[in-house]
Length: 42
Image: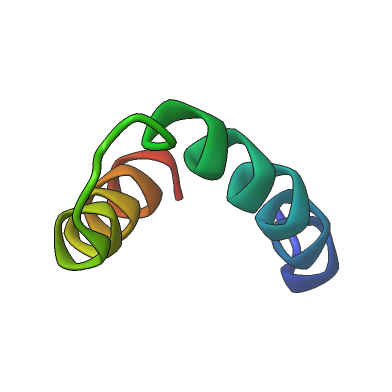
């Protein structure tokens, strides 16, 4: 996979992560979940 392809995926992944953790009330928990999920996916 090339760098350009990964950059394109990041935008869609950001939207997906926001949806997954939308119900988590604390910002710090959402941020950690975001980091974890991005690490798994990328």
